[in-house]
Image (cartoon, rainbow, N blue to C red; front, side):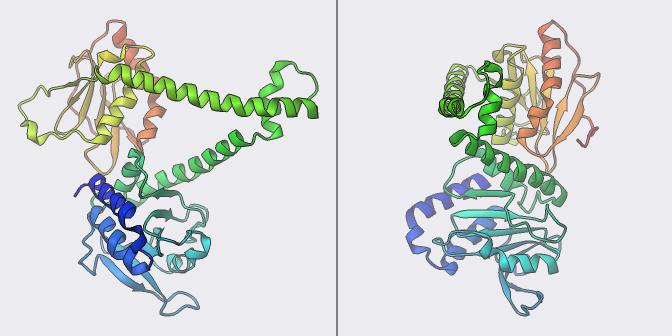
Length: 365
């Protein structure tokens, strides 16, 4: 079962049967084991998914953690389960905290069946961070959850790639939290900064009281206008989204366009729409990569999404040949904005080039 399908099934289970998950054992059976199975781990193999894992932590000899996951023969993930009514916080991390330092584990998951908190050691080596770098509610529906979870699946598990993503996720989450807090209750410093060019004179108490509500209101209007614009663009382009047939003899049944590829295509399309009309950007999926072309012309390659592997790359064509750039998440495609627009601008001005066969990775990014 695909990760998406597994999450959908578990989400419905939580919504329908959460009242019966009042014990740790119920959470393990109804949610955690199916969750691990969805990541392709063999929950019936005690050498891969180890229940009641025991290690000699300092001062707590014989203490157990609910599950330990082995990848390539090494303990890599520790899991601690709590009843669904538990509010997960740092007090529940004690066992994971001790075990993390005495095993080869690099990641620890704390869950109550509904919420999942992923921790690692970004702040100090071999010392579990109190704050999770990734957290989600199983009843939420967001493609980014699937993209991040896929990195923990048995077939794609890569410690270094996950750690790179973890660093970005942790601090992005903290920044988002701070931005949201400022939107709800703008600080004096923020109000002063945003009104500095309005020539209001000295920033007095009266000025602060007058403009703080305006700053808060402005934030809300920006979000509302942004959402309205995105919905309008989506409605405008939905019927014009074109996926070209592959120009090869490959059996169509061998080509599967994934949600990540579709989302990646939409991101690329959104990036270049400022320099070329969106309906000229076409997706043509192949067996080994997902191609993005201008005018459905093989001589106008804009990008290639090499997503059929654990480490993902975006192929760029702003030079003589394709250059693959490694990405750790779909968000990283936005870091390639200028290069993608440069290629789109080249085609918009009438250029064309021959698309070379897929290249070897040239940039580990």
